[in-house]
Length: 448
Image (cartoon, rainbow, N blue to C red):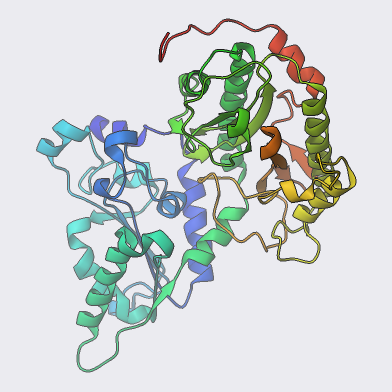
């Protein structure tokens, strides 16, 4: 059905076989119980501002971007009539022609193409979930889902868990205890940490669009512009290239703002002599880019800015050289990539009081990148080939109004690392060269 196909074509996706393989891998990990993962509903997200964005774990396992969907995996079927074959069901909300006048076409359980489009052999109505869940649960022992944590404790995850708890309790009856609900988050996160070739292809598209945005910023930055004007230009460039949205709130921090890690107000007018930290990335096919460059607003670094910049770049190169299978990101490990950066900072350069610079590096060196900019999975897990991580050393010296951060994206390989963003200038001479061809950004905005 054409209308159904329109809904699923909103994002560039991986082949349905990729999602099917992930579900099989998860079912093998959690083979002692039934697994249920709920999609977000539209009220669960800020869709009025940013459009609907799916639950990352649900999307990773299904590739389905429909609000209100439910995924059920059962290693032993429903046990009825000797049916103990593994079972996977996608539940979709029934279609509503009236609602689709507001939201656009949806994929529904009665659409003939739903199994082909989603890769699920069984597609059922979400209205039937309660009954089917209670039928399947007894043959499958434990019950797994995504348990809420932190800020999610009062959100959709909490509501979903309470729903399952009531359904499981009602099904057991007869004084039997309902199965305790187990957390599936760690098992899903472990799968998400190693990227498939098709995931990597989407990440690289996000990175290419974002690198183009950074190149355009290098041509536009000059004294007198507001930070938000540069951020807006970058957003335009990567969305024009096919990105759905920013992967996170764009950071364009100049002057003192360059020393504020997650500054995103972007309201200051840039001045001669400032540096500008641009931590900006787009999201393509659901996958995030995360790149940072630091630019001299006047087009040329001062001697002190150049000194600190080159130290940060040297630390980044030292960390990239240390990346290999078995290396660890987390600062809790005795030997970790963060320590490589700190040791480099402490051995190179001084502050105005003659003290080592390591204390001005106040965040972690790296994080995983994927469906989320700070992607799922533990930083304590040793790196493996196929993992995609950032390398982002920085020095932030408030008393000098000087913050420098350089962030690139790296693929862990069998023998080391491949920098996926290597085509974007990061040496001081190359940054200055890129800025020499500056074009004037149309001066529109506050007071202009």
